[in-house]
Image 1 (tube, rainbow, N blue to C red):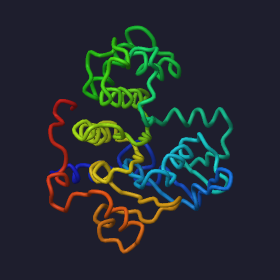
Image 2 (image 1 turned 180 degrees about the horizontal axis):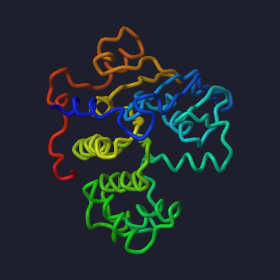
Image 3 (image 1 turned 90 degrees about the horizontal axis):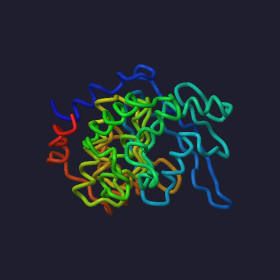
Length: 281
């Protein structure tokens, strides 16, 4: 069975709503001053699905992600997560819901004053009160899942860019989240390291079966990691579908974006799925 067959088989069997919508964005609008950033976004992400929000820099992808996790409030519209409308939640309810999320920030956003282990263990310590040997064991388990066993004593300054991204992934899954959000996970990495991060995203989706949103401008990353792709342009979703749907779309914004980027042709080795995942399994 191919990787893409595997992920079709596992999607929908997670801890959310048994194949139904986990995240629903409904007619979402957001402006900063006179600049309209989100202009009527509609998007549904189902249980166990990895949705890629793809588009050029500045089109509003990261702003959308911040609304999904409740870091921003819309001017109008709604964000419904596991049946709960975020703008109707009080501060405590929103905090509890956020604990069901893991987020990988652009640039990793690790604390330089902490060790790798302290960074990964921070959510466990702060939200569950985990300490001592139990904390150390859980941290090592998460680091091992991203291929970084034995580095908990290091500082972020001692890590490469790719290793920092892996630590950020380990921290994001520390609380075994139902939903994982990735903000430009391969930005700033060389092609080889970017490919490893893409493989990790797919591997982690299989292992923890979380519902995921990956924000990226990288066509290859979108093709590799996504079950579905939402092409975003000038604050609007122009198309939601597979990479084949994007390739054959008549929408001018979609065709322009595809033409300016790179997407492998059908049947290429990239479409066949990742290789070399044994070290992470």
